[in-house]
Length: 327
Image 1 (tube, helix red, strand yellow):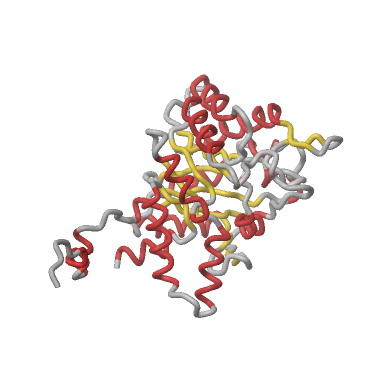
Image 2 (cartoon, one colour):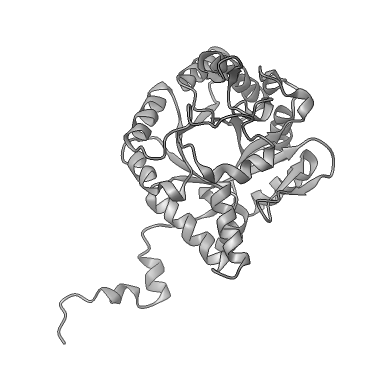
C-alpha cells in the first residue's frame, strides 16, 4: 500500500514525540495554593481533599522552602479566619497583624524570591460566607461598599509585601479601584492577578470545607458568572485588562478549557487558570478506586489546561506534578 503521508512517523519513539511536543509543562507553570490556619505545629488534612492540608504558619514556612527546591516559583495564600473575627464588615481582612499579613511577611522573609499572591475576597471573614458585604434586609451583596473594603484589604496585603493581589470576589469595578489605590499609595510594584472569569461552579465545594467559608444563605450566582456563558467571560476579562489587571484568570479550569482558549485569543496579558478543588478531588477519588492512574491523570490534566492557553496554572497538584516532571 502506497501512502504519501504517514503521520505515525512523528510518533514512532519517545524521543521523537518529545522533540515534536507542542506543549511543554514545567514546574515554572504552577501556582501552589496554600491554606493557613492560626496556631503552632498544626497539620490538618482536609477531608474532601485527600492528601491536602491546612497548616499553621510555621509548618507552611517549612513547606514553602521545600517547594522552592522543587522549582515551584509562586504560592497563592488563603487563610482560615477564626469565628471570633468574622462579621459583616470584613474589617479583619485589613488588620495589619492579621494571619494573612503575617503569613506574607513570614514567607517573604523565609524565601524572598518566592512569588507571593494573596486571595482578596471577604468570604473567609464574613459571618455569612459571602465574598462581599451583605444587605441583611434584602439578602443581597452590596457592590460598591464591598469594593471599598476590598481596597483596604488589598493595600494591607501590598504593605505586607505581597507580589500580587488576587481578587476572587467578582465585584464590579474592583480592578480599577485597586490599581488606583495601589498607585496613589506608592505600591507601584504590586501586581494584580484578577479572577476575571470566575464561574458559579459546583466544583468549589471542597475548597469551602478547607476555609469554612460556604455561604450561609443562598448562593453566589449574583456575582459569579453563569456557566452557560462565553461572551460574558471575554467582556469581563477585557474590562479588567483595561482597568489595570496584570494577569487574568479563568476559574475553574478543566470544565472551562474553551473559555481559557477564548481569553488567550482575546488578550495580550498572561492568562492563568485555577484547577480547582473539585477537579482535584475527582482525580483523587477515581485513583483511590483504581479507576485511573493518578500520576498520568495529573500530567494529562495539567497539560490540557496549558494546551488550552493558560500561561500559569494554580493547582493543588503542583507538588506532585513538579516531582513527576523533575524525575
